[in-house]
Image (tube, rainbow, N blue to C red; front, side, top):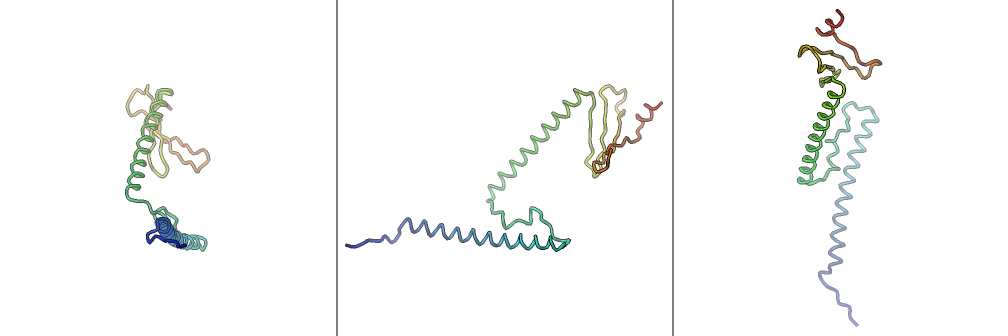
Amino acid sequence: EKVVHMTMNPERVLRNGRSNSMEEEIKRLKRANAVLTEKFNDLIAGNPTATLQADNFSPLTSTSGSNQQDLGKRHERLKELFKQKTKAFREAVYLLTGFMIDMTQDQNPQLRVRSMFAEREDDHLLFKWQPDVEGGLHLLETDFCSRIDE
């Protein structure tokens, strides 16, 4: 009795291919672990230059270019959907309450409240919003505000 072995055994080729890719994955994960451990130790030690931002995790990201494009497209679609829903919500608030509320994009945002029944286009109330302060909304002086007091 003789056992014949194939020189190109498909099972052996598959096993060798898996072991090579697994070894590469293990090496990549070890490098990523070392980078993250170093950053973590820097943060624990109080190193002011140590940060954990998304771009610092590049050893973990092995996504292909097409996958990155898909993620970018999805992100853009979500941003557009968010803008549409925000606009619809603002319109609903305006129709229900009669007030249009606009907010600036500053560190301490300001809210401008306009009524649909205002006599002039520039009749509005202006509030300064400080969320970290108790009673965080403060009415600011405007021409309309001074006319209301009269």
